[in-house]
Length: 532
Image 1 (tube, rainbow, N blue to C red):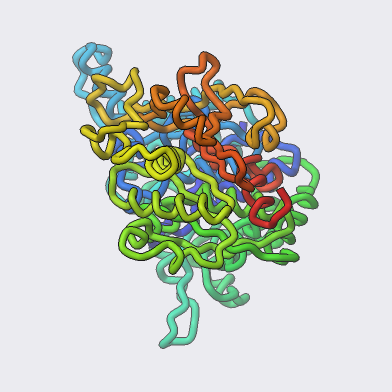
Image 2: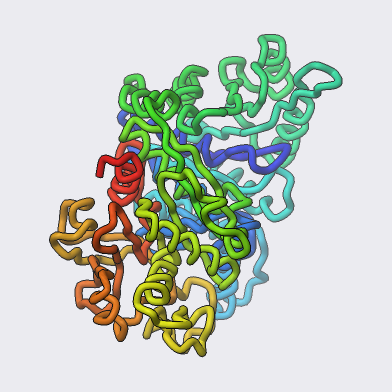
């Protein structure tokens, strides 16, 4: 097995995850089996309880693990289907070590960062190698080199390199090469300092991926190579991508990154065949038409809060040779402003998930606008619950209809707590999580979109449709098109006599890939184009 460790320096948010995923794409297209994982230095056990404004979206895996959004990049950019073993936080590591100490597993020895914490990190590397056999394991280290919380991970990697041999490992460092406007030039000193910090820890990067807004000229490359002790061909330019993140693998291929990696790891494999990827990128960058879509959300200010949704829209649009003009709408603005003033001119409305009652009434107003104006509508998780509340209030005449989450005393709680959630007090990893089967009713819009009667989708929720209201809502044109196999949980709803009004309790955005867009998003885009 070969190992690639991706570290980052100078500042955070450099795109280590995107660089790791892009490298995974290139190596996979060379015929290699690639697995990616993330080491996160924070003490949270997982990101499940983190504020989206702080951390971005929580990406849910098949087995129910709540993970960092970078794992979304890993799954979208490669063919891998990841598990909780692909995501490790300091919180998980320390939790495991302390549990062993309480059991007496250390036989009275003093428990220390070295060797006990570092041994646990190395053990997770080795167990993943056995659980998911591959040619190359790419591990991204979260945070920035020099952060105190990341030091145990870097020390563990230093030890690991000695154990598996340097010819089996590549350290790839992602760094910033800033352009100082006043000086009119790129500066290499931040990268030099970052590399020096890694050397102090005992790690010696062989590849330098340079994030920059401007081309890196030959003299700057030579300087980076000399002072960072990296071969000239291993100084890789990663210029900011304006049009699409999916250009990144092609850009890194042009820079020869995959060739350099294969040489360093003594891998004799054919060049990457990026024909299909090129075709997809071309459709994204130069679409034949464009469509305006409104996303009405609670965390709209932060791009990463709905990362997978935006990417899924891009995948589906590209499949229709179409570009997306996103209208990001803060749901709270629709509580005081008429929807027509904000949503006028859009071809479709998407209402994503979220927690808490802030902005919910605005989402309800947007949903009503889409229903009454025959605009294609796609509701995800909370979006389905909002669609149910809106229909109950304004079509069925159930005054005060609401979710028990927002108003426990509402006269018509058309959305109520899952039975299994009653009595649950812990917030972390306690929701209905992971992949569950759904049976789809034939003759429905959902059946037409999926083309099958059984699907498996990823969930993350505590509340569900209240089946006590099923009959009185179905009489008015509300369609339950998908349920759990035993019929006890409503997973998909739609409306009769509407061009495309579909909402789901699950998160389809977690299973969309560039050349395999999710059916619900594809149907939504087709409806927005008038082709459904």
